[in-house]
Image (cartoon, rainbow, N blue to C red):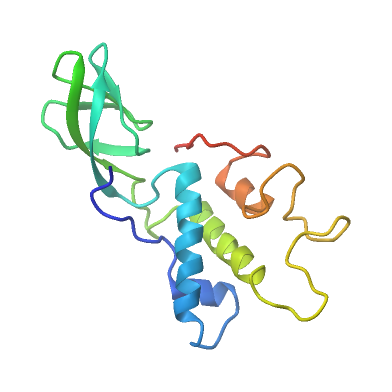
Length: 180
């Protein structure tokens, strides 16, 4: 389990700039959309920012698979990280063992990889825009034949195709976290 709650990797100032918002009246509400968007992305691609984790794992054949990925480093003495996908070598025999590690991606010069940051901003924009009441007769759902190319049949509308594409998720929804 993560020992601290990961911070959102997009902030209110960035989101407001991306949405062309100039008023401060929606900062608290917009924060909720940012939290939701960042969590949705973390669920699909793994940890974005470095975050500490500790968990009890099953060791088999001297190896264990860590749940929160990608993995930057294993902090428990004697353990060796074999791959960022969360495979680690244990100094103990087979069985159960507690391991502490750091999950997330290596920080870039700008903090978060650009494609993930843009995906977060686009997802905030999508969630925010589709939550706003646009007057009588308007709809926040996709309409067949409409010009909004963010909707792709067979995928969940809460994660538009352009965001999935930025994250490298492809056309089909998946519950498996991707790493990299």
